[in-house]
Length: 440
Ligand SMILES: Cc1ncc(COP(=O)(O)O)c(C=O)c1O
Image 1 (cartoon, rainbow, N blue to C red):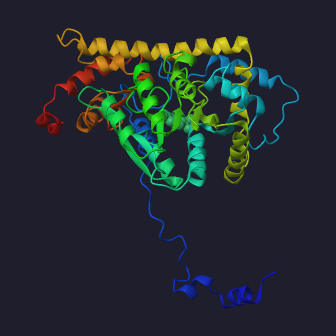
Image 2 (image 1 turned 60 degrees about the horizontal axis):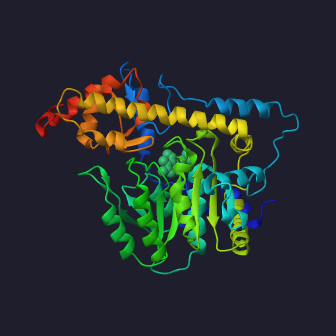
């Protein structure tokens, strides 16, 4: 039933907004500005709209097979079949923290089956909306509970993964860059990185890519990781790992978790890992991930988990079930697990093969051995080619080859049907002077 003042408004035919000086028909949301399009999704849309049969999508952030098609892992098909044949499966809500067996299996995957911190119940784990949700939950948690000080700032790599800053800022965290990539050598600027980690305030938060750095494809070597970890331990920084490519980078799940496990072995008092199953299971749209927070002891881990459950409850209430069921079916079966490892080797192996092929074609017969060595030295799905925005424009407009403006190539967009054409296109724009580029 309407109250008196609501009834007055209904009778008079006006809205409460007219009292604030707005026109009767004006929406309270009238001043909402148009947001810029997401650059990645915009690139995909431009590719789809291109009708040229030779077009090549090197922007896509998802694995493609040798026919440029999405690939459903054979082990995922099997797990799906098992779930379909499970008569008592229902669509009830999962617990707020997620599917129990999935949480336990995900912890083991990241930290190792025999990990002492798991044995001592020092890890608080939440199922999340893929890696993005894990980053966001971690950021919200830090925003709320990390003590206020000049160290309360998240340091991200330069260049960063495209969504890191927006996620952190959305959680009201301040950010700063640490040097990471040098364009001159197309590799890691380890000295500058170490110097920055020394210089920033003690107890700072440092966001690190566990493997297959996106966008550069440049990872520290194990010896460089040791140096990074040692400075961070000495300065008591908080490591926040983004692990979006475990097993997908090298084909070896343990090798791709090496950096995280090395940091854990140094017994940092707190450490976060945002884990995604999008790439390594091909479960992109199922939004399957975890956030792990390593605490000093089991009691603190339990308190941290209770607070993360509160954050989860107001944000998504409970996580989605399907992807977690697929992943845990595979992770808990030795036979399916080894089949998954085979699938990982198929994906990472094809990417390595395409890196080699493109490099060989670009260097062939030019007497420029090593000029494109960064193609094979970098790792994972992405490669920073060194091509500039103008060259990228020409590649798109003249050759119908699509990559992001920073020259990042998604290697999985290459296949035996298009790699020669892409090499020809890269070779053509590589040789262009400024004047040529302007004419194109
Ligand atoms: C470095 C990095 N972090 C996080 C993500 C988030 O992935 P998702 O939310 O699909 O798991 C991605 C996806 O491309 C990524 O490359």
